[in-house]
Length: 299
Image 1 (cartoon, rainbow, N blue to C red):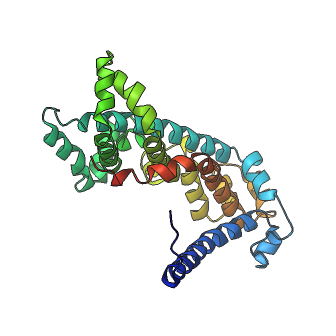
Image 2: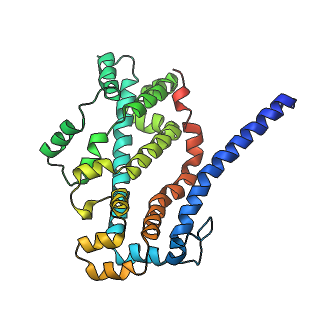
Image 3: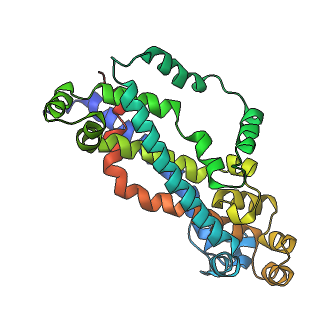
């Protein structure tokens, strides 16, 4: 491949690099500031001395929310459970539906496609969905935040597009060897579709991890709260001390109010909430780079 060394090409490369550097700084600087506040001394936080580096390194906020408050570790585990189980269910049903709908000889295929695409433009609204979840007895359970979002119409369309571009010869060869449709999907199609599956899994997982609105609607017990919903409660109540006091932990609340600031608790909880995604992404980045282009494949 011959590299273009013209002045216009070099100028374009320089502009692109400058824009990417600006985007990188705009992304990293706020994150560094949040992490710095979470590791800083509460007194320095109040005085506004914290910048991009922690001031008087302090772990009191993390010790409090992880060791002294049982709700945050519990909510973290709830978020992990919701994310893992919800993503597995999403991928299972999205993959099965997309593989079936990608077959041009499927009976009533246009009707099913319209039926699956319609929720992208028209929905029943929050109230009917709430009444449906309640009538099915799923209130205050993990199913209330996973079943209603079982299949995303957008990712279903993307997967259909991907499966339509899959070489038909491989499927025909599998059928000649005695494989049924399900065996062909499991043994032939899925192993060759990992980039698409992992990419969509990432988006489904991030959506579950960051979601708090559905949990706010359907979950009633603090023991079932995911981390994002508990973080919202902490931010709205200003201090974790107020939250603990409202739950009957007056002694711990009084001790915390003298040691911590609202900012240190909020930012420490925020760091804990974003850390898993930052840890997981590097391991699936190689699939993400390939799979992000699946929507452009033509069948």
